[in-house]
Every structure is written in C-alpha cells, then in structure tokens.
Length: 183
Picture 1 (cartoon, helix red, strand yellow):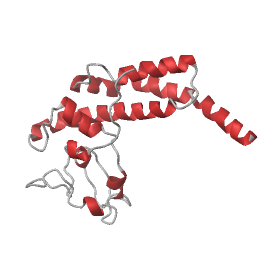
Picture 2 (cartoon, rainbow, N blue to C red):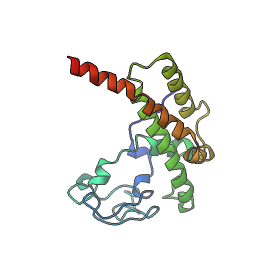
Picture 3 (cartoon, rainbow, N blue to C red):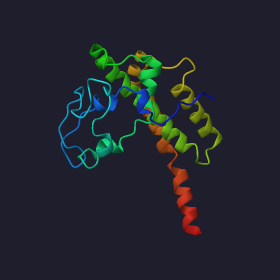
Picture 4 (cartoon, helix red, strand yellow):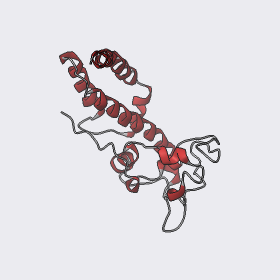
C-alpha cells in the first residue's frame, strides 16, 4: 500500500497559494473581484507577516466567507515542501506561473485521493478493490511528483478514469438506501 499524504491543510508550510492562484468574482462569498495570479489585497506582502492574511480572524465578517471555507486538503504545503523545497513565489515572483500550474495538478491529486478514500469505506468487490489500489498507487507514486508529472496529470485521461470508477460505485449507495428503507 502506498504512503498516503496528509490531507489536512497546514497553511504555515504553504506560501499563501490560495491567496494568489485563484480568481474570484465579487459575490456573497468574496467582497472583491480578483484575477488568477493576482495577489489578494488582504495578503501581507512585506515585513514579518509577509505571506499571511491581514484579516484571517475576521474573513467571514469582512466578506470573505469563501476564503474561510476553502480547504486545499494539504495540496499547498505538499507542493511547496516536496516540489519546491520551501522556495516561494513571494521571494521569487518568477516562480509564480510554474507554481500555479503545479498547484492545480497537486489539487487534483489530493481531491482524487480524498474521493477514493471515501469510496474505500463502501463494501467494495475484489475487482473494485483492485482498481482502488491501482489508482491510489498512481496518485501516491513511490518517487513522488514532479512539476512535469503534475502538469501531465491535469490533461490526462487518468482523471476521467478515476471519475468513471467512482460513478460506477453508485450501486453500493443504492443498495445502502434500499437496506435503510427496509429497516
């Protein structure tokens, strides 16, 4: 069985990726418009608090409930620690385009792992368990991920294959619902 990474976010080991990578539109969840790659106005960019949110403790009250609700499931810190070895776009802005691309790939990895772990709680058949193990092995490669392999993942058929597998498990949910109605 592969080593599964932590799926809990640890913002102290990240580089405020969610504050720069994502675009958002002014709405009930975001008080402003922000383009992808643009640094959020609430991110401290100088001094001892560089890379930290100025309004972290009051995000919801200040109109940034979307930020408060967001969870990268550990993809941010994993990318910054394993792939970029602690280098940051904050210190070297030229890294930002590559980091943004890699972050999208690592998000896919962590989201698929999370979905597969949830699916593993179902009473999988031997064939389904075999597929589950194959997908987890691929998502948790022994030699880790690279910028290049993360970029390839985003456009690969693998995502679709895992999605189809997950959809194929709906018969378990249907059976559980049937049993619950019976009781």
